[in-house]
Length: 159
Image (cartoon, rainbow, N blue to C red):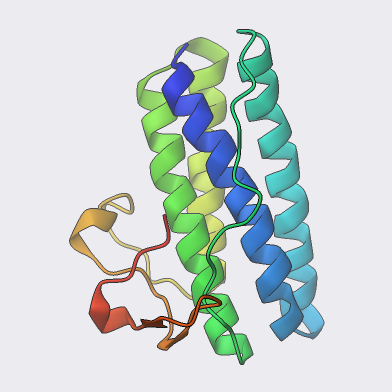
């Protein structure tokens, strides 16, 4: 079992739950319902990652808050949701590469689910969806909660 990969997944899922909590406020109707459903899926995934770590007597500290761009509309919220899901795709692919049997199957399936959610939020599929190092995350030009400017052309990434 890869403790480091599970730790990164647990942290990534916590960040996703936090991010969806922020971005859901900008959504209405079907998009809001999808965001709430994604939040639930990320809670289940976080709990699975925590359980895997607890089985190894590990309980890593997770930040209490994460940086999320200030959002002012649904388009920006959906772009951030896609970026969150793509970041998790990377983490689950890494977990899949470092685990075996049931954990590998779970990680592979979850990577597919996060990629599918990214597409649902408007991300255009690519042949290798985990090649994020070569692309900029779809973060809208905005000001973060800490007041610094962020733009897709700045190479901003959700991490």
